[in-house]
Image 1 (tube, rainbow, N blue to C red):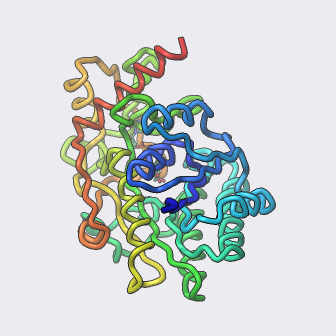
Image 2: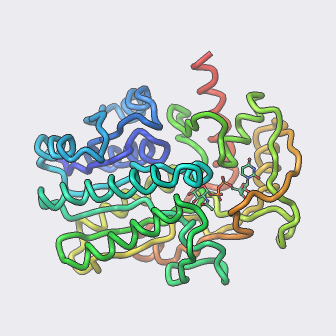
Length: 343
Ligand code: UD1
């Protein structure tokens, strides 16, 4: 029997590539569309090395309807789309907001238009915990009110969720919006991982690059928060666990007929860790020093957030498996193996 094809936009990126691996290993046939604007072609070879199968790949911009139409025409077996392709740097989004709104919203609308044309009605969306702002109660669950976003990036995620909910009400589209907490780590093989361009803005790649000597020291953004050690708390989740959540989401959309047209799920571990705990765990597990200083707070940071994931546990039958120790170990192994390879 022909395998079910899943369109994966942004499938060579950090979360996309791990999801492609999990999809292949779960018997799906991913079809990748990725314009390589924030990813590298060699990741395709690595996916093949890990899985023994080279997914179909189109180096297209998903904002181009003609190109996307060609992908659907050539892949009639596409039954669902996982839409990762988007711009994602919070700081940059404040400098070039128009680009963020244009890219993140036009890509979404274009994918939806073409899916409708080809009568493909299952959609998994990459949303973010950022939609909650600083929640009043922790852990935050899917019923918690959303707060006006501080960044243009966050605002595109809120708008996209809104668009998807409204479109799903018209009847042809079923959507699962996955609100990711903080994805870190890398595939166990160290063949794929996070590839930030330039100076990393996220914590884990900054730590790994500091540990390996590319950055002189990490700056911890604020130690005067109202938390046990004064540093911010986040829910870090292993990217392989996050990838599996997408496979479960696809299975759910493709097998259930009694579902509501639009639903949202938190995807995290349910545990909060402080920045200092991450640094200390990284040093201890990997036996490597991470020089750091404490600086002022970063504007836009919330003090504390971690996920209530019982909804995903129950409905998607998904639960994070990896520990914080696994996350810091895999992130470090990937950094070392990547640097060795580009030397
Ligand atoms: C951010 C975004 C989130 C996005 C995620 C992944 C917001 C508010 N957050 O999450 O939407 O999905 O990135 O791209 O929109 N830190 C340091 N030093 C550093 C870097 C970070 O101390 O050099 C601290 C931060 O202050 C924060 C924690 O580490 O407390 C995590 O930061 P980061 O990895 O950037 O993720 P978030 O800001 O939580």
